[in-house]
Image (tube, rainbow, N blue to C red; front, top):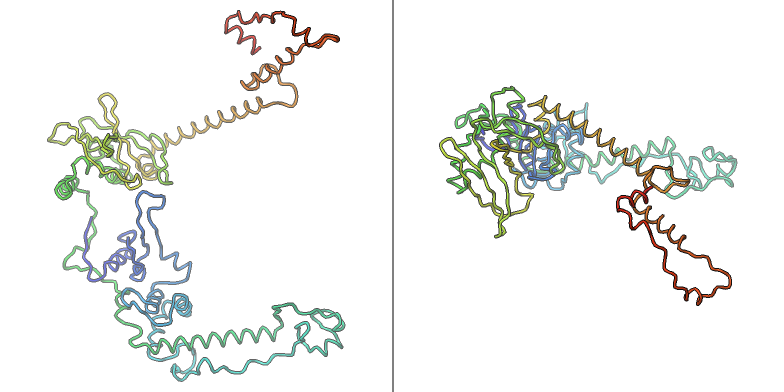
Length: 500
């Protein structure tokens, strides 16, 4: 990963690289990156969750609230920023946004300079007036005279005239039938609309005068140093850094040695956590320039796609990697619980100059959301396989033929599943209790069968009472119950007789 040194703010250099197209986004929690010229900002990084980060684009800001880079710089000058914590007193977000929207991006900073010098910028086509020479917002000119309105219905015309000639708006002939105006009635006649528009215009002009006087009263406004800082496009310290961005291969062995020395981590533990990153880099290479001889970690070749896996609300391919002949197992884990309550990982590691050995890495037990998904190791006879979770689009681009075969197999599997479900639903609908007689040849469910047999047995067991026969005479008869001859039959034969 290249390391660059900035002359001043780190966000300024990140934004410059993003604006020049050398990087895709800036990862920062500081929203000043947009003022420095960034196009895409990523913030609030969270691992292992459905939404791992928040992404903001300058195009969305421009289309959503209509602000561009220089207008956001003006917002920072008004409400404050990291370089001016206080801003202009009396300016909040809504007031600043309303004021900035009065000017285009190319005009806003020049207009702020004029206001800072005391010039009122809203008189187009006339001599520039000084802010102090403008009338105070409190001294308002008299309101515009409007035509008389009826106090009963609120429409143009006096109440006296309406009582004689009626109201044209109410469409009646006399005041007796004139409609009484409801609460909150607003007349929409031309004179009233003109008076309202003029009143709103004067209120807006008074607000502009008030804001401009507040800005003109500030010393050193706008701050030229802050403007140059935000609009600078030369933030790279070229004496201490190479301006070229070169993305090289990760030096796995050096990183393993560093973390083994600095963190006391086992080499196998480092390798197994690096494998997801290395597999992503490998898939990107295969997508850009396919090469059959290229292996993952110089040991594993792509074998197959096992299934689609849903993780944190996103879909992934569970990819199976096969260890090539003479390859090296760089890292793998199979978790097993221990009696002491800790989580242990059993890792098989084999380096170029080492023999195969088993290393046990102790990992402190923590929340499952904080632990990354480690690759699984599978052994089949003399072959070794790895299972990793990979991005679907990346695998489709790297191995299009294998991905197409997997997708076709999935479609066939889904079609069979739908066909089986439709047959089951049809059978269930046929087994439901029908309104008419049940068709012959359809087997009853176990509950329906026993209910029908029980009801038939109860009806058969009811003996008709003979007239004159008393309960005592019936009780005195000691006739033996009828013998069920079917009990002597084999069980299979009885089942066939019961189920017809």
